[in-house]
Image (cartoon, rainbow, N blue to C red; front, side, top):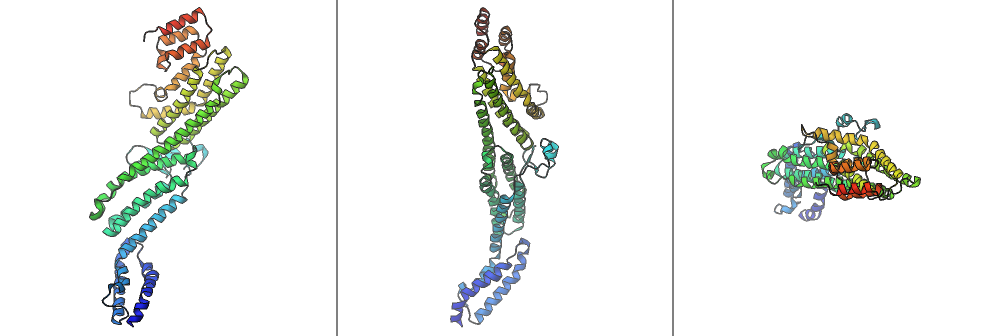
Length: 437
């Protein structure tokens, strides 16, 4: 009998573990206590086999069933960790990144956005932001896992703790790959992912405060989450900066198409410059429509100001580099500036509204001029294009042009480009050059 046991028991015990014992490992931590009956039954079964000399009474290696049953906590925790990570991966892969708005008419309706289930309160800030369903469901899974940590034995709690950490880190692994193409273009998906990372970084910082004191004492000192927060904050900033740089690049390409805004008094050249300005308007409005409803107000203000400053300073620089301009040419350039600014009025209004809400009480400084210094300059440039020479000189002497960002050389070159050589021009250039500031 013992020889038969040595031959058959390894395979029989493997089949019993695989097809029976492993199948009844509890799926819920609260039911681990019920497994005690199976442990006792398993022990009695192996004792019976020993009495019948089917397995050795002295060799611990033959107690395969008892060893498996007595380590049920380890098997439970391992299975549960695998299940948690599988669920996390599944939801990250399946969740879409749709904008949580019901209709196109609600795109700029802040009330509609803020009432949606995908709008979350940030733990360490006063703002609210829109995040993806993936981020919300992932954190729900993490919170449930950490609640189980608080109710589990040391061995199970340790596995659950690692499962919670790994589930969060799966976002960093899965989502950038899944959304790789969208991150290379200007769209709402990249903005939602940016918001997700901000949300996750702040949620991570709050986990230790929320659950740390309730963790089993043996893992309390070793359970760390704060180390993960900076990597998500960094990822958020990288995503946002990439979107900003994509927009700045597209704006540069659009302005390049204007060929330096030269000879706009010629119809073909004017149409070329106008198309360039239309492209600038389209790109900026696209950023406005995508960013304003989704980004935190402070982030929206900073980001849109950056792209506005980039394009306005570029256009202003190109216009000030023009020389020997005809009268019709200056009027056409003025028309292009007015066209651009008028079509961007809704963007300016949104930026001004955000700035007013955040501005300290009693601060009366014009917000847009502070946020986008080149906006004041390009507006003043539009005025200068049909301003008399003496008025331009007076504006310089009164420091008005300096406050708008003009330099001495820019004003001198502008006067030379607009007005033909004459005693009056020489006089005005002398006054400009010798103004004592």
